[in-house]
Amino acid sequence: MGESRSIGFFFLLLIFSTCFGDQTLDKITELPGQPKNVGFNQYSGYVTVNQQAGRALFYWLIESPVSRKPESRPLVLWLNGGPGCSSIAYGAAEEIGPFRIRPDGKTLYLNRYAWNNLANVLFLESPAGVGFSYTNTTSDLYTTGDKRTAEDAYVFLVNWFERFPQYKHRDFYIAGESYAGHYVPQLSQLVYERNKGVQNPVINFKGFLVGNAVTDDYHDFIGTFEYWWTHGLISDSTYRSLRVACDLGSSTHPSLQCMNALRAAQIEQGNIDPYSIFTQPCKDTSTLRHNMRGHYVSSQSICSVFSSYEHYNGAFPLISNMNVCIISPLFYQ
Image (cartoon, rainbow, N blue to C red):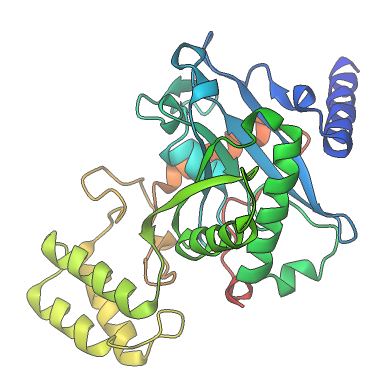
């Protein structure tokens, strides 16, 4: 009974936060299993980007430690790619966030290399349907694409800055990885264009950063194959086969010759995590390997990804069916 009242109370807070935009209602006092006295503030919640369709995007703001004067540090928006991957389950929990999940799946420890040591980091689940972000219009999931993703992210920023006016005019950067090689430049261009002619713009855009970015098939193939070859993951002959068979091909719909060369490379690599080739992979993850936009993900630390999926579903109990990664051709339209 007490637990039901607690969940109901937080549900009401979420509604008020979404409708009226009070940042104090979005403040996180403590996450499950979080270390004590972390020294920085956190906020999370929803920002509506399309009232008619019922689209709302979920964010998690992690400020710099109070001792590092967060009010003087820039704001960085982080976007994961996929397309369709969660910025919470990947970016925050696996890559640049302040916490790591212990093997028990219940407790957290601090990440000494977290980006919030130097900046205030805003993780965004984008587009709607990814992670905790949602739409009440089912057709949105079938008609989404890069253009709408950029437009929704821009509307999110405009509305978010109204909720957090202390960040207006602050130095602002957009960062991301993988398919965010599309998301980041496109959103950056939108912000830049709409800031034209505006004196002292609210969104004080300073630049963007992308890592391991999806750009186009030709360059993605070259970068991937050279990485494998120069790190001793594939043989000279397989490298030459890949360059010939996959030259000017499509990573989404590779030719039969290219697929055969990719299979040969996969066999030579063995059961490794291509994103962290010197660390031990999870057990029994070889069956999870699948090709994805030229990045050929095997496990991508799949054991800890599932751990983050389970942990943050518990951390935000009002949300169900968190999608760690939705990989679908629909996102490429």
